[in-house]
Image (tube, rainbow, N blue to C red; front, top):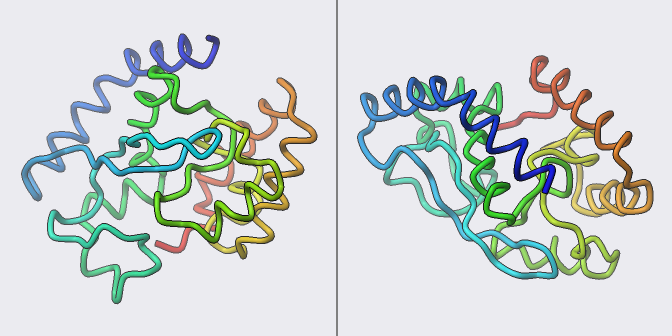
Length: 183
């Protein structure tokens, strides 16, 4: 409940930023402003994640690292959104809906079976996905799937309010330095 109330308050406080970003995306590439994609939630359930659209409308619906020359698809405003992780702000909607939390493993794409097999084996699939997580601050896009799941398993074992606070704090410092961002 804490996650839901806090995310609702943040949505209200950040509504001017949402409006500005929406207008910039609209001016550059039209509607839709939000990107919606099927993701894996708790216990291998599925939901639709919401993000600000940082890529052009004609972009294939695959993980960015699987695109040939991904930079050709990124919007001008998209580079900025991704660098500061502002594209993730609409994830707050998913928290209000109860599909995500602030801290947990990042939700896998619906077709990332290799990652989900590792998560199920490690018991990490029992966690609600989060906007940030222990794996994100320890490498984000730069670590192998096995290492990512090892960090997620460590989070599962150490999960506490204070550990979550530490992860959120470290997330802000990593985002400001753009640590671990490849695309």
